[in-house]
Structure formats: structure tokens, C-alpha cells
Length: 256
Image 1 (cartoon, rainbow, N blue to C red):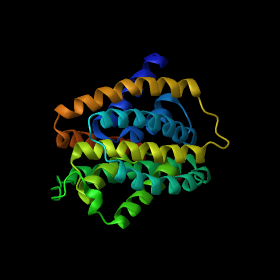
Image 2 (cartoon, rainbow, N blue to C red):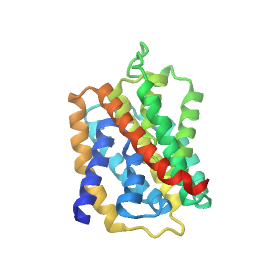
Image 3 (cartoon, helix red, strand yellow):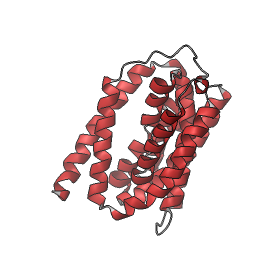
Image 4 (cartoon, helix red, strand yellow):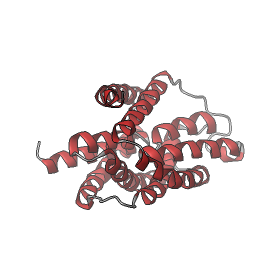
């Protein structure tokens, strides 16, 4: 497949995942940039943050227009994550490429297994206005955990944020998806700024991925309203598990 066409297809798929599921874009972007585009894991992490962050902003805009975005929860959760992700960004520079990919694959495997086992949560009676009844320590703890992963591994954390918003906050799935995109954008920006030092970025590549991702994000956000969210999440979880096993098989022997 020609390079440009491959970049367009990958960008569209990453954007579609973000628009459809509110996450998953970053967990696909880093392996795609390393194995299909040929970037080093450190450069791929920084590039991923730029791509996923830009697509998340667009996805949040689409969800805002549909009324499926809770700004109050997003800003508290995302604000905490921004601080942690900025300072955690420097840690990845001290980790070997193979170790970084093993850690990334292990996270993918854990998340995939959790998503497979996850049962639909029953939203509390306060419905779409959870912030009034939500314990702030849960929001801060969740935001800090996601921010740490974003800074080190370049993951936006949507695959963690959406379940947390549904199970801890009690948000409906579509509101959780829209709200998570704001958090992803905030965390990605902070981590991207933390990674910039000493990294040479491929700006044309980022532009191609973001452009194709915008189309995918728009399509995913519109399509998500008509599909079974639970089945989509299960299918995505199985894909993530399979990809994590491949990454572990390729990188684990290098550090043993």
C-alpha cells in the first residue's frame, strides 16, 4: 500500500475510534506509528499525542453540538491529568524502546481484559448531572492516573476515562464519550508539551493523520448514535488483546 494511502487509512481509523468510542485512538496510534510508519517508540509517543489531541478537540466539538458533553466533570478530571501528564512526560525518555513497548502492550492487555469483563453499569438516579453528587477524590484520583499514563506512554486514556465516567460518575454512555474527548485533548496537550524537548517531529505526517482523523472522528461520532455501544466495546477489546499479545511476543524477548 502506498505510504500516503496507508497514512490516510490509519488516520481515518484512529479518528473513527475516538469519535465512536471516546477512546482507543492512542492505543492504536503508537503501534501503528512504530510498526507501519517506522518511527521510534519515543517519537511515536510524541506524534501520537499531537494526532490524538487534535482529533479529540474535533470530536468534542461534535459531541458538544449534540448536547453529550459535561464540561464541569471534564475540566476537573482533565485539569488534574494535565498537571500529572506534563511532569510524567520526561520519564519515557529514560526508558528503553523495548521496555516502553512492553509496558504499552501490558497496559493494552490489562485494559482489553477489563473491557471484556466489564458489565454495563446502572447509572445513579442523578443521571446526566453527576458532578453534584460525585466525590471529588474519585475525580482527582482518576484524572491523576490517566495523566500519568498519558505522559509516559502517550495514551490519551479514553479507554480508561469512559468506563470511569460510566461506573464512578454514573454518566450515560454517550455523555461519557463526549466528556472523555475533552479530557483526552487536555491531557494530550500537556504531555505533548512535556515531550517536545529534543524530539524532531514529522509535521506533514501529523497533518495527514489529523486531516484523515477529522473525517473519521466525524463519521464515528455520527455512527455511534445508531450502534450498540456494548458490542462495539467488546469487539474493540478483543482487537486490543490480540494486538497486545503480538507486541509482547515481539518486544518481551528483547528485555529478557
